[in-house]
Length: 189
Length: 189
Image (cartoon, rainbow over all chains, first blue to last red; front, side, top):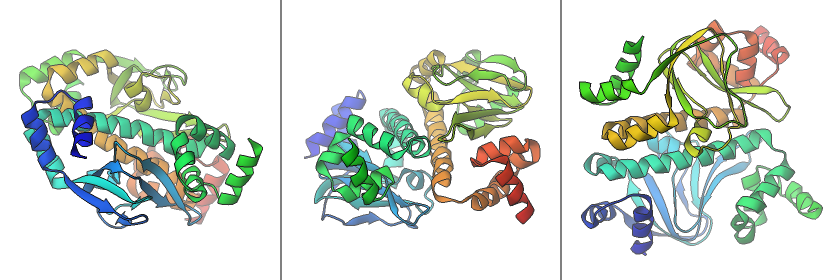
């Protein structure tokens, strides 16, 4: 279990075994039931999660009052409500387990403590932020510039696991469309 | 001129004079005419800009084919088409001078070279990315969850310089609404 996290970190940065052990010592395991909420909006996001098994989703409530999923994290991915994690302000986003899941988490204070203690952790976080910036901007821009059909085609192309593994309700929430619209799209393709 | 850039960097990180001089040696000054394009979509974003005088804007073409401004950088702010700067892929965004402007720029290769050479530059960039992530996510989320009036009120509250200093056309583009809608909003308040 912990090995998945260790090899993920080692794949991103050059690091000694000693540094790696210090980093790992700040992570805690946690088991989650399907639908369990890890963060509600209005709370401050004080933990970052690494998924070992299952799936987490980050979502917000859109203009029509429906939930809209910004990000699914499957095995071997990190996730948090990052704006709130950075600012410590109340989150606009929720974090929820979509399946029974096993995760590791690190608290905000441990995370920032490691930035001062281990320079390579600074590099790890920088790469994490770069990836988060790119993914998140592309995601939110796709809401603004693509119609539903384009979004669905891109999803099938780039993230088929979401369609393969999750319910129609989750897929619709990821595309920011209703389940009825999703059904119509599916019949068109 | 260069002092503005130097004090900006010193306000973000602890750094020796020697390190600061190395960093500054990688920046080049540049004068821009109003409306001049620094990057068109489809090009790779190979420079990051620091505004000494004037204003740059980062914009994209929205679903209706109109330009929509994601970010205005005034004096003492950095700006680039960051997704493309990170990935080196063709940019979805344009960079344009909104006023006659004076900027410093650093190339992508110098920027990443400094990350290896000067550990504090890694910290500088990490903080830059944190701020960019927060600003950009809030911006794009506001497109998705706020109506035009809410967006305009928030703009007056948080970024009045945009309304004070720029044309209605620019303000409308920042709110992702037409100039006619903006006029109606103004008459309501």
